[in-house]
Image 1 (cartoon, rainbow, N blue to C red):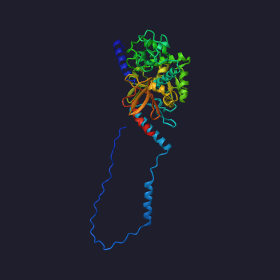
Image 2: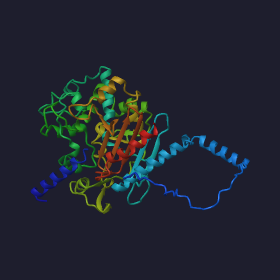
Image 3: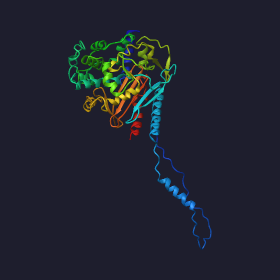
Image 4: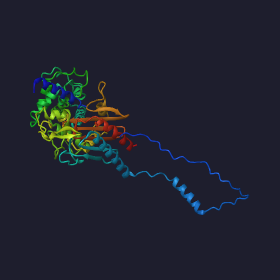
Length: 450
């Protein structure tokens, strides 16, 4: 490929990859048929005397029965019926959303206060075998890992081991060797994305580099070396730009100050308190079974073929558009590049448990939650979590997007509702984004607890 053509390809992929960062009804009034109130004109001679009507006891009983029926309240569905109706509504909403986007497989987990979780799987885990998705299948949940890492850091701050506004250099000397602002960036700025670092996960140049060694795991040190060579986006603290390198660095800080692996700290501080048994921080831990097959369309199709020099032998399509099965290449880089910024692989029941436990007092106290959910600058992002209003409802949330998977986790603090979803397609097409699903599912859940 000529140099100019390759530059144009990288630019187009870069623009497309940047996009990744990130039932109609009508009221119908039914009318009754018109009632003819005009009596027939029957001419007859009126009698001089009228006999009193004889009352039929059966008629009295019928009237009393009518009154009894009117006085009885309409029976409300019992708890089991209400739960099944809720499951049916959620299943329809999920299926309709999938149909719009041609999404192969999805897993959804919902938790309402005082109830057992509702877990729903829909679609297929493999476009070729058409094996159905199950609720115990594993998905890569990507950046939903970030609020878990942030919660560990907040705990360590409370323990006096880390200071929020201390430079990262204090804990990791030489962490960003040669970078202009290496000595100024603070722990807080890693957590709230005001550090000015480039988002490596959306860089075509980084993806092409990593794709050439897809069978060799990549370390956080190697990623930071790449980041240090990139020009800063802005001076630390002056602006906001979502990125992942800061959360990789937080993983190294956690390991440095605790003397334990990040995976061990996440399991003891996050997974176990939340009762989340089926979640693993790769590449230190892996699920007992691999995640389901995952597919890339649009920019991810280009990245998964041309940028890494891979031939599309399966010729798979969704809605007439080519998609590439990410499982057609080695997974070592994909399972190591995210780590504490996006490496968790999980069943969705564990994800809904954790997003709830972070904010219901199980893992963080009120002061820590307030700190985490206080937003920065003019953004909706705090310390590792998005805090915003959706249709007038307060929501703490985080999305996740990695090659082949798109995920979302949400907690509604005023209703004590949590839910999480993951699908095996990225990027999601217009009309079938995670925000579209949220606008469909959230009213169903809020109505269920009223």
